[in-house]
Image (cartoon, rainbow, N blue to C red; front, side, top):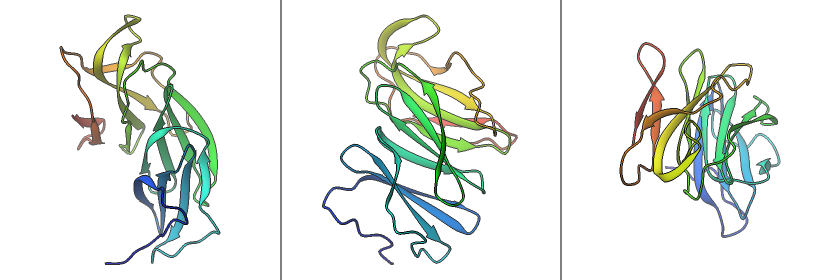
Length: 178
């Protein structure tokens, strides 16, 4: 057991970590910005971070395709920030611009061909209506292009569907649990 990072303040929330080749990216939420710490294969810090990944968003989660990372966050919508192998934010993709009043908990995965982002939302962009929280997914290409203009409904039902999780499928695609 080893402590790999000790934040200078007392506020570090929602930590997550993912490996890309021989590097790791540790992300966390800290009073507004989402921060990142780049680590080597021995979990030693590579840069003088932490460094800001995105200036806002809650519930950050990080996934990797083996070469870089995708950090997903929720706020007024759901965003995905690509982070280079050197730990630099490269570009941001707006996954869902409206999620209603739900406290969304996005997750991401790479299936070998595309990125998948799952999230819960009170807003159904297909019917343009608000209701209880349901589970949706959208795909992002390797080059960072959002492939789905409308959300793909995973589960729409009475009551709230929350806290989704996602993993790559055996034959591509993704499996979602909530």
